[in-house]
Length: 165
Image (cartoon, rainbow, N blue to C red):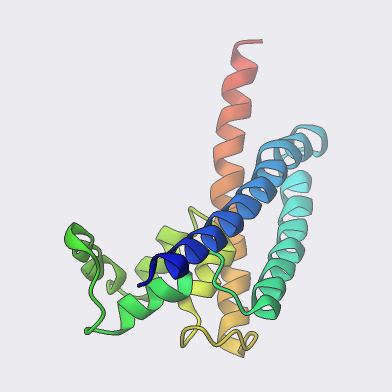
């Protein structure tokens, strides 16, 4: 790959990941704990889950609209789906993990973000063609599972913090 193309790809990835992490920080580390603390675990969790669903749908819409792989997920899917694609050096050990199956990927990726889950599990790569019925089911399931992971973790942190007050 020519250096100019590699640098451009790196810039897109860095920008996409930076925007994603900034959104996640404000939402996950500021709004989410505040909602749980102020509204209670059930109401606050439900409100934030609904907000997360809206935000995540908008992110996927923007991803498809831009037709740009800001998160490098489409490239990872090409590696997963194509035996001819080689990764540099030791990274080839990742291929068997990528091929463990959709259920494995679903639960592991829910620790990252529901957007990542849906984009990774969508059929095809570099298509940016919206969401099928299957994708919407994965989207809602991933939002529920990922938010339950997050709520459980935040409750543990909040309750631990309360012990020391």
